[in-house]
Length: 439
Image (cartoon, rainbow, N blue to C red; front, top):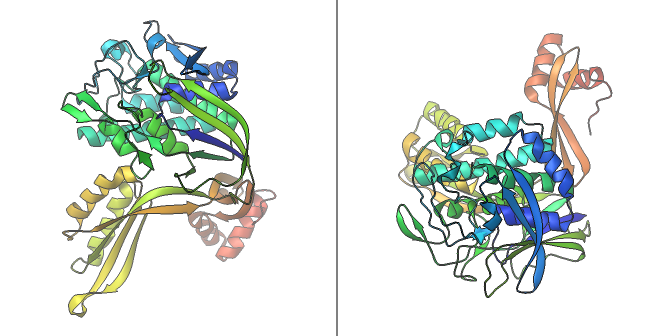
């Protein structure tokens, strides 16, 4: 099994990720060709060889005509103007620079809002896998910034992350991962660094508020550097891509190291300012084909809500992005019948779910439990035939299909139209779709 591993001992950022993946072997010509499918003008992407503390690697430089990224790689000395317009002023001596710290020079770009960026990505001719990953990365950053600044997600304005250079950083990283196509992506604990950052809200401890939200549920460590080392973009890339984090002491099984790539930051420090990625060959027995992710489970025991009210509560949770909502009957104190309301979701949505509980239920408190979800990869496709269209989902263990199922609503529709059972409807759909079969 081909595994891509991120070693984040010095943190991670978007531009250093891009440099490391190209250093690993992604063809830079193919990368630039794919980036041109974004339909954006006024940028140039270069890669140069550099070294830090005797370690050589590749430095990614995005030039938007203002000579900014020539000094770009991940500088944390700049000030963070974390205002509600996300308009960050900072110094231009960028060594190890924040992806989210681009100055007002980018205000002339029209693609600043999350809605604008999403529109650019979704309408582009990017490879489908890269497109989905880039949208996922940006959506996570938008969600975090929304919580930090108290504005709706669609109203978040990315003067900094939405700037041309960072769109190239994020889309470029997504393209690289799609081109490498590893069977699994793993990562070490994430070094967040230390020290402070100066924001519009005052001086805050590192990392930046958005980064704190983006790494919720992920294994992190601090204090290795007296600088902020992980940026929102770097954190979002990991959150959107990593299948498994390897925590110190757990080990990662037996593997064969195939190739290593190094992304170089510009700051010269007493420790190497680099991001290291490696391509490994691991035994199937070590990684049997399923994935895992860190989630949060919120639970409340409720004995004074009607069935209608509970149904509305469930709808609200799903509308706010819950992955699963379940009701379990309980016998509570004084022999009262009650309901255990369980909500499963991504850590970055925790505050949203808290608000739903307090606003739409009668509870005055609930439990929060970090959980690890293990799941199979899946693929969705549309079957077409005389019956119309039907959605089919197939789950995989690694690359091997395990089983498939046609959506209930489509089977039920065909069953009603043809006056047959659900089982017969399943058979009809597969046969008329041409060779479809149940796995």
